[in-house]
Length: 358
Image (tube, rainbow, N blue to C red):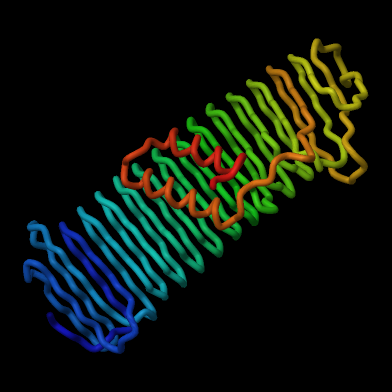
């Protein structure tokens, strides 16, 4: 097991295999390769570990937690990182990437690969062409692009972008300012934490459950919008082809302006029906009034109806934050292990957010 002087910059390149990178309280670097096919290239503060042999290689590297620069390139295989701080770049063409307890800056560029990051402080950028992305417990800016895969983001605070072409997107316990875009998949937002949310949806449904949104800007092409017991303090929502069903938190204040161009507006709230400007239309334009408040939420449908309900103010209390977090972790672990489907995980997570766990 060779031991080397800890470098400022580490480069690891494998053609096929597993790379395990561990940060520890130490001042040197130690690695173990099975089989022993890894070549060492060292130039001052730079260290390179490389194997272009087509055989499978299992490489474990133990190093100081703080490293200025880390670059990993694996053509086919798996990369695992833990307890590391610094500027990290990972490229995997086919395989998977996982990181735990990271800080600094992480950029992942993957082809056909799943990416999981559990616990990070700093800037995070993940781009995968065909694979899922799962990020848990993140603080800082982020950009997540899953291409044709799904994205699950839980317990995150910061300014971020989440995008996928055909997969679904799930945001759970997310705060800050987030722009979300999905082409064909669904978008689910659970228990928003003072979130400013910008949604762009293609053909999938959008579900917002619980929590508080400081602002909601949404443009949906085809698909229904459903809001369940959420507090939305302002914004602008347009659904081109689909219905909007909003059961808002009982503490909702202000007013809601509903414009159903080719549909109806249904609500038990105090309402004022207004005419459309210009040519007559079979739809409805209605202003709905909640309790006093400055918030204004505008909802428009081109082809679809709008339903607005006032949620209960005395809803049953949720389980403690610690209990809910424990339940979410178990569900995500089951999903990651392949023992439940993404659809089942979404249903279980929704049940936790709405009624709590014991």
